[in-house]
Length: 186
Ligand code: 5GP
Ligand code: MG
Picture 1 (spheres, rainbow, N blue to C red):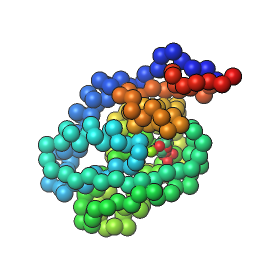
Picture 2 (tube, rainbow, N blue to C red; picture 1 turned 45 degrees about the vertical axis):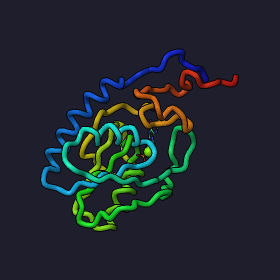
Picture 3 (cartoon, rainbow, N blue to C red; picture 1 turned 30 degrees about the vertical axis):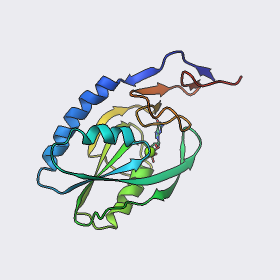
């Protein structure tokens, strides 16, 4: 393991914010006549959600769902566990699920199926990042901030071993690297 002196930034804070302006415009247009409820997936979506909803000019509601997939620090095993149920009624509402990243599709596939049980009028998916990988579960994102190759990223909501979610940018990490500031025992 080696630790970089500088983060390997893939998307800067400015790039993210510029992209969000365009995404909000598109989403607002599509939901013009709809009763929008944003359901954000904890915890990775929190920074994205906060910046995204601030761009909306029309009323909306938001809520959270908590799911975790057990695994090690970089890969998920695919067993989904519901840690927080939604707390508002989404029956007949137009739901937009917001998450940090679409990878294998297990999380968002599970969340979409779960939310459909509450009888929403529609359910669409909005992710900041989409990995160009083969999905284990077939699920499409309707709104995507950026696409990226199959690399591990952290920052702007995404964690490395539960830390670094607060960073205003998204950085990538090689297989043998840890983030700057992380201690390496050799
Ligand atoms: P999926 O269920 O689509 O495989 O993965 C979705 C979840 O895995 C994401 O919500 C995120 O928590 C985690 N994940 C997938 N790829 C990455 C990554 O590159 N970095 C981090 N920090 N988490 C990731
Ligand atoms: Mg997540």
